[in-house]
Image 1 (cartoon, helix red, strand yellow):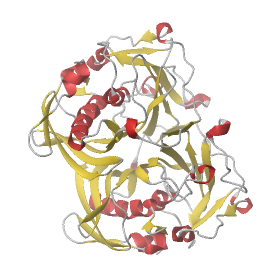
Image 2 (spheres, chains in turn orange, purple; image 1 turned 60 degrees about the horizontal axis):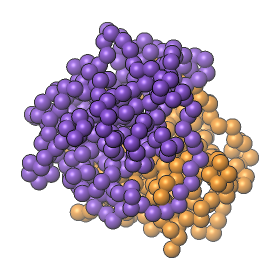
Image 3 (cartoon, helix red, strand yellow; image 1 turned 135 degrees about the horizontal axis):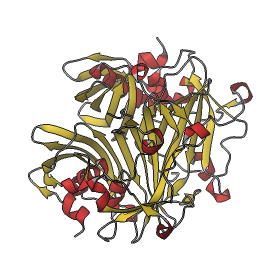
Image 4 (tube, chains in turn purple, blue; image 1 turned 60 degrees about the vertical axis):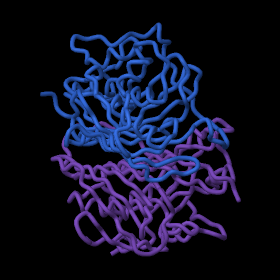
Length: 262
Length: 262
């Protein structure tokens, strides 16, 4: 069992109801990281639909959760041959924390043509990259081995005509082999693209959608995140997660909001 | 009133319940186009939350609708200062057709920094482009003035190292000024990127998310759609909608499935 397995465990607690616990080990500041919550809720949605892979997961973050008991209610809207559609709500007490929609399926059973026209970005290997450093690193950072190329994220961005970008390598800090649920966590584990260049306070996610396109293999995952459009404080963050073997494992996009530094 | 206004009209029919009608004018084959259904459901979600703009809309297509009466049930999950979170289901009789999640807000009231690092793709102007031609054009095609550069979509794609791409100009055929809901329809109005290059039967959408980033101005909208990863019959389609003034109006991503030609 990995830390992520432990901390996303859910058990059936009635029809369409799953009990679990939000661990403080994934906190960023006082609230659990959104990617961790996505993995926890997706685990319940996979169990509810009896499918191994989260093909697409969309999360809207409603109110910040707290560490402690959590209930995920699931509704299997559609159970088709190729995929299922599942709605879910992650709640604590009477308070809803995250509302979700997912398509779940079996990537190994998909059949059809394959044509890929993209390659992972070229960055220095993990051994030439550096862990996040700083005095007030969030607790969640210690759940990952996350390494960025030296000097990144650079204090650049659209002012010089380039997108805001953050790239680097990630794996689970406990050395466990990543599963598809780890990809959901990785999709929200890197520093926000605009955080350092703009010196903003925080960048809360309004909505995050992750498409899992391949099951991970043991080893590092390369994450590449890019923001091209920051308009009136709203921004998208487009992410790709690649395996060491050059396969795309997931792409993600979130709509987020800049909050000024307090 | 435009055709789109007429055909997405909903009226309150009880708490969180909206009545409307699915018009056959937006059919592709025997089923209404997914973008049109997205606009109809979003209209109910905007009304339910009292906000003017669909910041983010995710739709999962459950079963194909038929022309005729439709009910949209809405639940305002969160009503915050900057945006609301709304869940919805589009149903006909007892059958659910589309399940949705949205963040709605007011683009004109957003405040914060703006930095943009992208430009619309360079394609010939609308007058140098050509309408879709063919013997069996879907009914929905006549709701739009949709023009593609001569010779496109080209029968190319990742086999020559480039993504599958479809670009072109679009506006509502009745000459009405596009609204934010029209952007939702435009996001699913172009021919699927892989349709001509692969000669596939159809490309049903599993999940479609559109982020509206700017309100449209009168005139043409430039659509650019790209598929980089077709893996085992599953593909993403990444779309951008640009105004004639060079502003990004929306970006969209869908996860879709190739069905073989029958």
